[in-house]
Length: 91
Image (cartoon, rainbow, N blue to C red):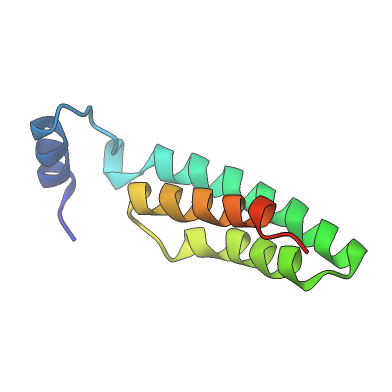
């Protein structure tokens, strides 16, 4: 795992600003995890109320995956993909 200075240098090479704050704390990853976890919680509640397995499972996946993905870009891609699956993969 690269350190903060290496990551910021790589990001500035591609014209991106520093996404990592002080101490390696990543605000973008925290906000994305919070947003997708809330969507997952709502999907989970809906799935349980309607007794439907698809939104329940996708909701659980949306709530849990941010704990295991440290890469911000990958976290957003997975979150957007799961949210899209929630709306596109209906019964």
